[in-house]
Length: 99
Picture 1 (cartoon, rainbow, N blue to C red):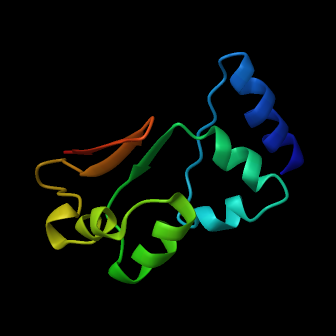
Picture 2 (spheres, rainbow, N blue to C red; picture 1 turned 90 degrees about the vertical axis):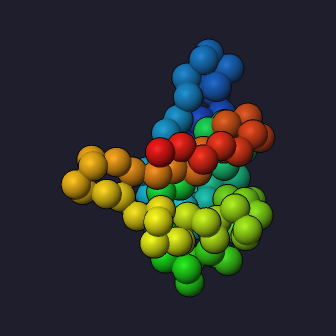
């Protein structure tokens, strides 16, 4: 975790952007280097989630619950027939729904 945190902090100075794929980002953020990792995340993508995880993600990612609640809707689930998925994207503080 320390190495990843160092990469996140120092790499950002050189243009390196760290990506994290996690169902439980709070585990990453609560690690030894979690604060450094969280500080350098400029872009966050959220796909379909379960309603009960909304409060936890709101706290760990800093998203408003009303934005995350839309991600828990049935209409936000991936559609295998149409090969389509939906995403809430936060990039540099701006929120956009895609899909």
